[in-house]
Image (tube, rainbow, N blue to C red; front, side, top):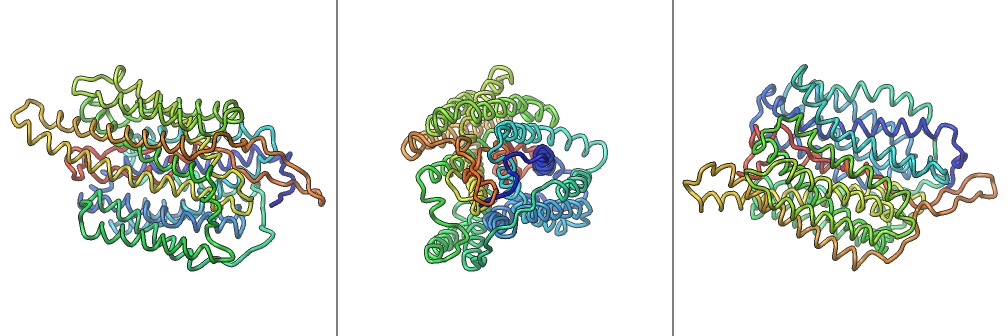
Length: 536
């Protein structure tokens, strides 16, 4: 794939600003919605049992449509899909803010997820193409990651302020104020790239992939709400296996498949997708359970809890930027990913030592910093490797696979760890009747149980990184940019890493639907469920 003027695009910094603001909007939305949810429930009068659908509706739409969203960008041009996603996402946010009923709010959230699945892959692809061959590439991706890294914490603080001083509705209306000038700037500055060939959309592949991913996300979400043995959970997960297996079989014979299977068959890319999924499954335990611990056991306010996660965000941004520009070209992905998994394992083991008398400075802060460094080591090289060697015409669907890996990983991790935590809490409480402060101590026991299992997830990630990822892969940044005979610039086929994908992933919205200490939704505990360094 070729684009004109890529080497020295005079508008490249304006493009970065447009994409960064759009990314910030998505990051803010993930954390703001979590904070606004209790107030929205009180305003619209829906039940605690139904509240989880405000979260699940987004996750279902986003997770099931990601591959289609990435493919549409490859087929019809990423500027078009970016603007369509940005406009649709903001309009859906406005509908959600104006919602007069529970059903209207859930529908708006599903619409947000659908347009988010169009927006996210387009933004990554546009940034890659704009800075392809530029000496400013590493700096651009570092800035993009820093914006998204700080955005998660800013969303927590801003959401608390808007909810307390104005209304929960302004937590959704704020996207309209951000989107309008961003759309105008996107029309002016984004490159208008048209694919040289436009094959037909793989309709059977779309139906099977969307159905299979929908059933998979729904199955794990239902397991969190009900149980792993519930009939609906079993049926959904079984259906996902059948549909996704059929999807693979169909894609093998399609001339223009939705997902070219060579993208995931490659050892380096397959290992990177697995690493992203496992790291996502493990890391979201921190945001979910530490949020509860800091508010319920340490007495932190929602805003203070958001501020407490800032050191981790800072460590992740600094580490990922350094890894991207200084280390990855020299070492390749395997030692970095393995080292990051090891740090994640250490951080989780550190958190298993939490007690009712632990303090933030001695027990929480060190683990957050260690985990931030570890995640920076994992996601920067994993995202780079996940699209290494992919043709430019397939960059959209390859980046969508990154988001899909996180979606599945976050869904599985949150559901599994929430269930294990709830079971451990119940068992501990039943065996220690009469103990003082039993509810708090039992809840902390549930949290530490979840951290122990999360440590196991990181240990599995370490083993898979060592076994599957190749010893050395040439860095995407090292790929040369050459001039074609017609004077156009040949874009390198690899996509560099972006820490922002971690922060803006759909997994950011999981975890609020269930109290891990009781197995039930709890309004007080759900006031703030920090879910993101990602991830939509």
